[in-house]
Length: 419
Image 1 (cartoon, rainbow, N blue to C red):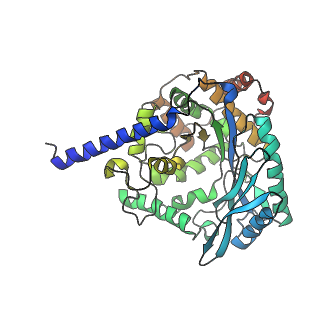
Image 2: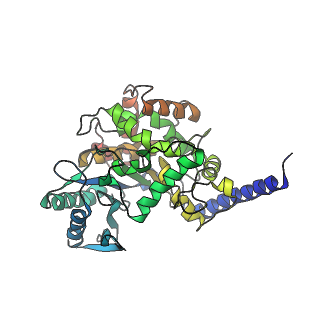
Image 3: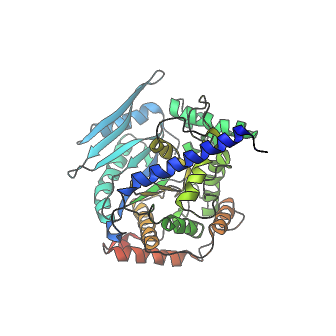
């Protein structure tokens, strides 16, 4: 027999689920006022880069801060955010530049002191993006070279994640390590010291496609997930500087990344019957909340808590961002977060073209064969190495992306090349 307490908990959880649905409907109502138009899709980027010395070892805080200081001294660039940490003193954290159209490009620490992130605004097409991004990329490389360091695009650092060279004492990252440790303790598993700081040694290229009517047509996201197992050979660099082959790059990145969250339904490829707003909200309800380990709600899900313990639903959705391979935002963007950083600017543009082209095709109703459950199993086998990565299906998806770009009529397909 169900107790009164259990009934009350279930009722509270259901009410919270309905609140999230209403919040999404209210927020998205004004975003999607027109039918999907491929020409109105926009493109942006969040590019993670390591700062390393000539031996490809992570640089320390003093040299890293000199890099940020020199950038902030360039024309048009302003130190937008600084923090003062007791043991390190003041640190420049985020630097931004506004172009003549009011669009803001930001450089900030992704992981202090050895990894930065370049965040661009949205652009109407890839040519417009390249014209803005290429000079920024070249400027950062020049500043790094002048300091005797490298702005380094590689999928991973060849260093254990528990090394002091990549372990930060700054509160946010220290809290995240404690949070991942708490997830192990909660389920009674042995703590993997590499996994709790694994994000510090991996780097990603995050393509952001805007203007997607995903809330009105969730099949777009469902289709894009079905494609993921098929395109691992097209979204991952062929080799790293260490000579590691593609299969090993994929396995090493995902193995330690997933382990702390292995019972979270959204980490990696979502464990859903299909992707729609209903199943997504249900998975969000069952996902451990990210936050300082000292908080009692940290590591617990909304389903367990029966209430939102902090902020707003906007804050909640933002906090869940990092756990999703394809993150749908309230502003109508899709962020593809799982692609390892390619080495060159040409390869970055090609990856973005590929993601934009496939999104265009999905917006037109392209639906791959198979089920969501089958795709999740296939993806898991490939990232763990149980099944070998295969390029057999790659040409078909490359051709589909090319078609999607052609339909946009911006001649962006010229950027699409095999990496």
